[in-house]
Image (tube, rainbow, N blue to C red; front, side, top):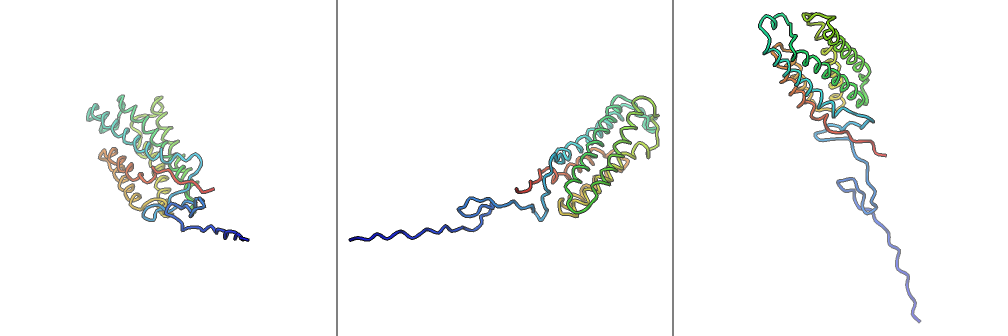
Length: 226
C-alpha cells in the first residue's frame, strides 16, 4: 500500500522594499515621502491650492505692466515724464495690469501661507497683502474716475504694491526656514525685489528674475497618503 505525503505548506516571504515603495510580492504600495531633491521638503497638497498657477501668472503680469509702462513712456514728452503725468492710453492699460498683478501676488501670499506647517505667519501676511491690494485698487479706481490727480506722492501710489511685496517676502522666508523652498530661490527673489525698487525702469527684468525664483513653486505638492 502506497501512502501519499501531503506537500509542505508554502510560506510566503516578503521581499525588500523597492525604490518605488512597493513591498515584495504583496503588492502593497508604501507611503510617499515628503523630502524632495537636495534636502528640500515637498509641501503638503491643500484643497484648492493655486500657488503653482499664481507663481507663474503673477510675475508674467508684472512683466506685462513693465513693458506697457515702457511703451507709454516712449510716447510722452519729457515734461510729462518728469512730472509723473502718465495719462496715455498705454499708461491706463498699465495701471489696470498692475492692479491684476498685485491681486495675483496677494492671492499667492495667501496660498503659500497655507503650505506652512510650523511658522504662524500666514494670517498676518494675508492681512497685509489684502490691505496692500485694496489700497492699490482704490488708487486705480480714483485715477480712473478722476477723483485722484496723476501727480500723487510716490508713497501713496507705490504703498499698496510694497505692502503686498512685504507679505510675499515674509511667506517666502518662512517657506525657506521650513525647508519648503530652496535658499537660493529666496536669494534670487531678493535680487528681483532690488531690481524692482531701483528707479531705472527694471521692472521687466525684476519680473523675469521672480519667475525664475518661483520655479520650485510651480511643482504641484504631493498629497497626504491615505
